[in-house]
Length: 123
Image 1 (cartoon, rainbow, N blue to C red):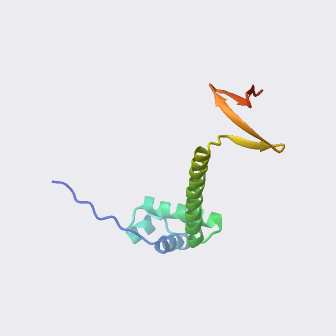
Image 2 (tube, rainbow, N blue to C red; image 1 turned 30 degrees about the vertical axis):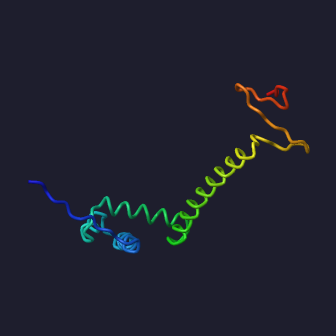
Image 3 (cartoon, rainbow, N blue to C red; image 1 turned 45 degrees about the horizontal axis):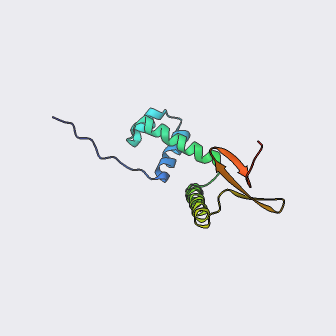
């Protein structure tokens, strides 16, 4: 006969913060507080780590969420810019062009060596 697992409970961030505050203020051990709250000591330790990380950054939880979303959006936008740049270069026929000293230099790659207007580029 198989043992049925309890459904996984979810706790709000506010509940987790209050549990950590209770742990800090009470002076009781982590195991005792965890038993009183009906969670395992390892879960309560994870919550302590989460709260300490929040305190270390100096940002509110809402600001941390916003920062995480902004970083995700930035990464997505950078990827889109890279893709669009490659598409534009492909569609216009320009590859690896640079502008230096007012002259447009086209860098063409042949068999692993770079040439500038037919002359081998010295490395």
